[in-house]
Every structure is written in structure tokens, then in C-alpha cells.
Image (cartoon, rainbow, N blue to C red; front, side):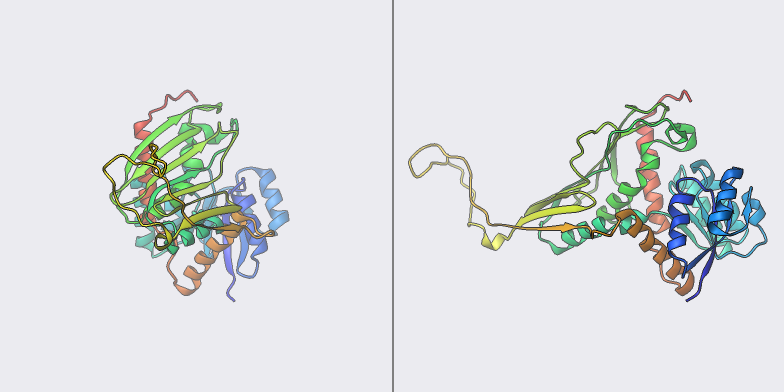
Length: 354
């Protein structure tokens, strides 16, 4: 098995706690061959943990040989540094948000094409076990035609770090949003831009970016998507709720329940235009007894949904670089996601004070 040499830019919560930790558990396929961070204490820790050369600036990697460079720098550096890396001949995996605007992503894609290099965006939630199960239930047809998909990535939190400042390409939609929004657009299908309605608010954050988002997406002949990202929800009901013509699904990232009826088992009905009357001659309401079927899903006890999704995503990257297989998340899909985020912000111009 070929082992890929990787350089990681940034040793924050993403570069160290997500990518770095994964590579330590996936040592048969990946080797951390270099780490870049401006903070000396982070470089010192990386040298101890990964046993590799460390650098202060990413330009010190130029002229060196790596199979993959992971851009886990702060969000404002995703676009410019990725373009620079591609132009210097590196395959790049860029953290989300990939860019602030669709045009910036176009520049990144053009640089990848010009240099014949891979550009992948780290959208691993498409491969999370709970989401794969949701898609499996939908594909079974048991729920009938979907009418509404509700997605909530909610909790109660106050935030005061750099990721709550607008000028840092931050706020809940840029920070958390790429995960559920990628899932939502995957369920919508197609490539065209959906109709977008968005309401944003600043609730508990100490910065000037939003920490409440209500996003409604619609397309012809598709279910309505109700996506919520809230930092002021102390009674979160779960992550997913599907409403279909034959049943529903509801649950979290660790447990899902769904129920459905089989039309052939339901009482035969037809439209009645006259008032309904009970057998006793009393005014009656439409009611019938349906035979409900139920099922459920639980995440494996030793399976962390986030960790599992990261490993599955890196499998797609590894197979792309070593076997030429297509990436699961395409740049066209990411571009549509960024266009939705841009439109949501256009509808909600928040004042800047940071």
C-alpha cells in the first residue's frame, strides 16, 4: 500500500485535532511529513507528536515533495493560500469554508486545472453514518414523496473567538453551515441554484457575525428544506426530521426512528363532498386506522460519527490520488453551497463593529 506524504498548514482545532489526529490513526496510508504554523509552541508540539520537520511559513514548503497539502489555516487564508499552493504544484485539501464567494472558488478550480492538480474541499459530513442512513431510508421509498426535510444543528452557546467576526469569513453559516448545507443540497439534487430565504440574528455571540440562522431552500418538485443553525436552543429536538406522504423520520446523529404505512394496507377512501356522519348519526371528523410499520437505527457503540466521516472522506481522497477514482464531493457542488451562503448574507446585512 502506497503511503502518501502530507503537509499540514495550521495546528489549530482543525489542523491538529481533526486532520493531525486522523493521520496518526491512518498511518498505513498517510504520513505527516511537515507541519506549518506561525506559533512556536504549536510547532514544538507538532515536532514532538508527528516527528516531522516544522516550518513557520507555508512558502518554506515550495520545492519540497509532498503528495498532499492540507490547508487548515484560518478561513481568510483558504482561498489565497490554496491558489498559491496549486500554482506551486501541490495537490490540496482545503478546509471549509472553501471560499467566501463562488468567484473565489472558481479561481481555485482554475488553478487546479491549469496545474493538473487535485483540489478537494473537506466536506466530510456527506459521509457521516447517520446521514447515509437517512439517505437509505429515503431511497427505500417507505416514506413516500418527501414534502419537507428539517435539519437542525442547534445548541446553546456563547462564542467570543475569531470565528464570530465577519471579517474572518465567520459566523454560524460559514463555520457550521457547510456541514448541514452540503447535506441539504445533496438531498435536493441537481446543480441549479435553489430559491433561498434566510433570516439571521446575533443572539449570544460577542462578535459581529450571526449565531442564529434559519434557511429555507425550495426547488420545483423537490421537498422544502428547513435548515436551522442556532446557538440559543437549549431544548434541541434532534438533527433530522423528514415528512413524507407515507411516513416520517426523526432523530439525532446517534439514533433515528421512522414509521410508515403501506398504501395497499390502508382502508380504501374516496372524496366525499357532503358532511360526514358517524354510525350513530352524529357529526363526524375524517379519521381512519392505519397500520404503522416502525424501524430504528443506532450508531455503533464504538463509532464516533464525526471520526467515521473523517476516515471515510480521507478514503475518497486516498483512492483519488492513488487510483484516480472520482471525489465524492465535487467543486461544482461546493460552488452551489457557497452561492447559497452568499445569497443568505445578501439578505441579512449585519453591522460590523469588530
